[in-house]
Length: 230
Image 1: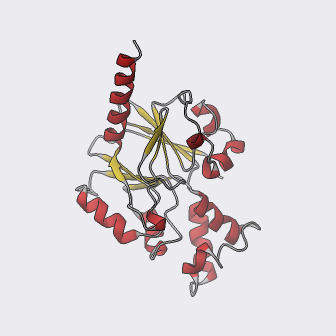
Image 2 (image 1 turned 120 degrees about the vertical axis):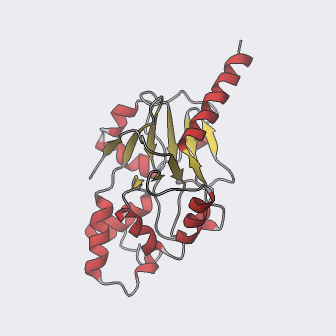
Image 3 (image 1 turned 90 degrees about the horizontal axis):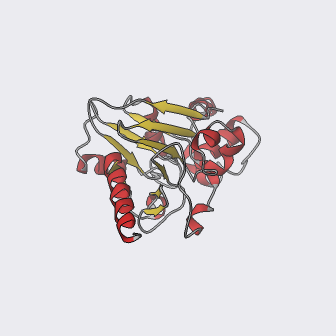
């Protein structure tokens, strides 16, 4: 299992990040077009769960071949890996994986192996700040410790504890962290953790934003809080 990769700064263009796509490939293309995405210099990061639920999971898997696309593994990718390469989630193909009907088993295993190579966590260098990325939520407060700990993989793909807390201390080792997994009516900050799954898999909108805009939002919010706390 790949745990972590570090991504260097993009010196040519902009970095975008998208919430859980869940097979809605055309919706993703529309959001990229709206943002003016330039595949010769911009990059797109994904919080995972690019497959299942929606109409075109196979095209979403094809994003793995795009040099400008980078993703962390979501729980739906992990279910596919476990169902096809392991002994867990035998019901995945009957439920979420119905889109695989008619596909050759050898092709499915090839895609599963590709997904098994995707990291659980990612640290993205943005020059003046760093971003920690995992699908569901951080497992604790120390980014370096959790990203290097195989025991943190499951909660970082499946966890839903942080969103239920009103006050949390910030994750150390990165400036902000970004996640999907739990559908929300709109993106939400919990400390320096940003949750951006707005329910595309359940008929809601797909959120795609520049990473620099997300950080600026946090920086301004933090500065405002500092003023009012004096």
